[in-house]
Image (cartoon, rainbow, N blue to C red; front, side):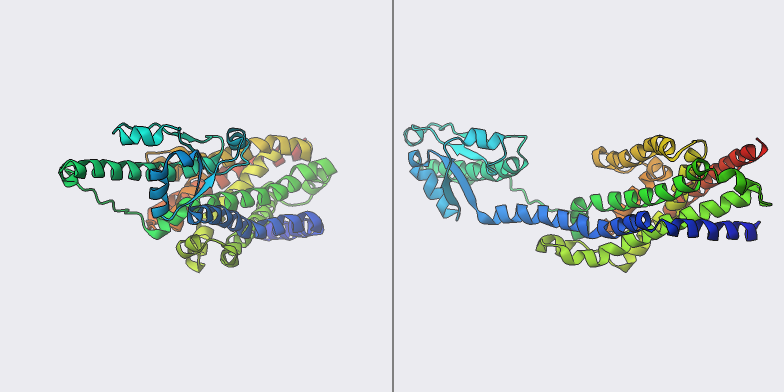
Amino acid sequence: MIGAAWTVLRKELRDALRDRRTLLTIVLSSVAVGPLVLLLLSTLVAGMEERAESREIVVAGIEHAPTLRSYLERQTYRISTAPAQYEQQLQSKRLGEPVLVIPADFEADLARGEAPRVELMLSSANPRSQAGASRLARLLQGFAQEQAMLRLAWRGVSPASLQAIEVDERDLASPAARAAQWATLVPFFVLMAVLYGALYAALDTTAGERERGSLEPLLLNPVSPLALVLGKWAAVATVAMLIALLSCASFLPGQWLLRSETLAAMFRFGVGEGAMFLALLLPLAGALSALLMAIAIRCRSVKEAQANATALVLVVSLLPLLTLFNQDGEAPWHLGVPALAQITLMGRVLKGEPIAAWELSLPLAVSALLVALCLAFVARSLRGAAVK
């Protein structure tokens, strides 16, 4: 059986290598995943850092608040006059900074000891304006605290008497954990590259054989259906594992493209992290290959198999959303779900958190069980086709 499976494996790999254009597209896309994801992340973080370092505030009616202007300039902020149609520009995302609107009676209310009312204009559909609104709100709160202390001092009251407690904030997250918040897309794109790498080979070796009419003659050879399935699965899994290797390896030189110095200092993806990614992805690559073969073996054409495999692609792409929207942290059952377990553990690798041996063994056992069940189903289907 082993010799027959090895013969089938070599035959399937030769067939896969013949379609060089498709194979080259898959390989190049998997290699480009790492640099492309890191480039997009660094561009996003670098843009946020540039806006934070620019220290620019857009204000409408600053001439009505010389006291506020003095405070903002003492905080080393540069004041820009809001454009005429700032509301429309905020809604259309042409203006990326929130606009502070100051009424004409600002100084009069301030002189009477009243609280002037200002407007902070932003659009929740404009992420850039929403990000800058919190910074501007903190500045206004600082101005309000300064005015309150001045009023207390003018009346001979110590401002410290109103501050009953002092709070020191301490962030317990490590630099790697903070960087992993930005790098949450890294495991997702690696996982999807492996899935699509296995998809092409799995559909071609099952539904493709049936559509070309070469499956029935293949079953006439003196090879057991199980050996035939093992050889085909080994070929598909080899392609998927090669994609996993290339995807993980692409992140090593991809770090050179990081434009953000902060992200480059925190994000660390070395040989050790790449080896852990592979230890998690290789069993999953085998499981996905077997599952895709089980889906496609009942189909008459590649187009029909692609339509049926869309459900699996959708499920795998939606599983990472559980880790994104789950605010209660990891649950034990996460490690028993293929794809979700790999996403969870790869995220912990990026955070630098330790992974126990049983946490690696459980996804491996689930993948092995899935491979056995799917290959048994494919072998049974081929045996039935051979009888017909």
